[in-house]
Image 1: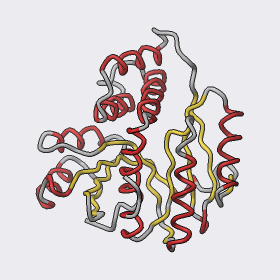
Image 2: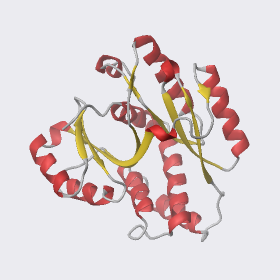
Image 3: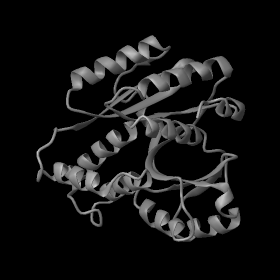
Length: 248
């Protein structure tokens, strides 16, 4: 066990809000389409697609929606042509921000991202300015009251996980991208999980005081209202009391 899972808890709270307004379905459909386009329509041979499909099922997306998204991705059904694009920048207190988008209009997306960052105490940076601070990993969240710590630790280490952290409410298991599915399946054989996804884990964190923390959370709220944005990764840390003050 080591440290805290920082932003993972906040993302989980925000994901619940996103689900209520339906945005999470739109985001996952785009992810499924891109994964199917890049690696084929069979989840068993396409780990990226399998992760996206598992995420969709975890929020009760109908199987028909999932199937149609896969077929649009492989070109068997007509659909919008999305492409991946990332933006990098800074938030209040010099926090690093890495933004992943799926868009059918790059000019529209970059204009919205730049405007939002500038309006809410952030700024858009050059490509590569903060990306080096993050490493792609698998991240699994589990409610602490579902399983004893020692039992979960034994399961995840036996199946190739790299680390397990404690954020007061949840356990967060970190894996390589290659072992995410194996570790997820091993945990799900015992208990339900909150989420399993590919995540960008920062190498260091910046501690924000209350004022800057609230500014940062406001900026993140506004960024995640942009339809083209799939994920926002940051390297800030805040006190648990501020997390608890979040709505939802």
